[in-house]
Length: 378
Image (cartoon, rainbow, N blue to C red):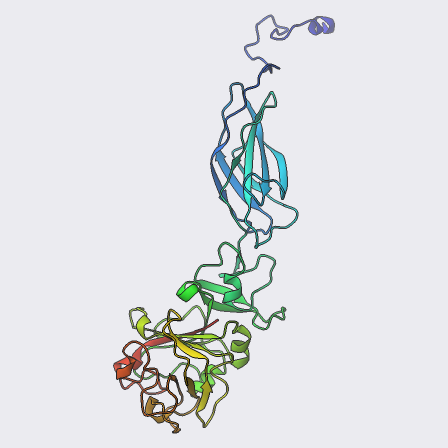
């Protein structure tokens, strides 16, 4: 019986019936390559720091597609990061353990080619460029290697593909590592982006925040939570040292909102100064000579005799640019574009010439002062 089975030819079976299945044969004369894979979709974007996902529509061939090979490079069709590697006959693949680890400073391309049973290769199909992404931990973005930027501007300039969206990011303000990181709100769109929110003054006629007895206490301590920064919320990121660590480009942006969340952009302004504008201040008006004051587009700037006034526990001459200091109320601030004088502070832009919109603590005597105000630095 064994010998008779050995004499069976292909296509016969020992029971005398013809086998309806045949083993594929490969002609050595087959020189026709498969069609290239199509409709490549790249995803994942290196969120695991060395991983990305590619899916595609399958190739066709005059005989049979045997499988696919994938490569990764820093140029279209390149394979300097990972050479073409067999991944089997599938239509979606997650590339992992790429060596060396991907860099946020580079753009990458994933290429794929099909092969048939005769060893013919299709033309190479290449994805659009991609880069690695920030990871998200507890609702906030951070670097994928578990480190953190010192400020929002650093994230914006990092090259990670998803570092351009407004939202929550983890910061390490002093850059020391360890457990010093904080969650912060980053505005990545206003005037080029990279702004870190350091304070949210809530709207309303009273202008008293939910934390501290005055503005000095408000700006020298943390207040509220960064996930609540609406019209009725008070928020402060911390004291002078935190703001000084975050400050990178020496810019402070002041932007007001009405109760519907509409920004008052024509009255917004940017102060250029190389130190914190809200240091510890009790019983005095601090007058800082600043580099310049500009509108929200960093245009129409005034750099001649510009000062920023800050009184942490009192106020300065009813929100005017005089040099006098008065106790009571509980804090005020604003800029003066022509030095000391009997004119309204903050009057350079928009309609500020008609009122002093400085959100004096515990005073909301005009409709202008009821606006919510957010203060950003970068």
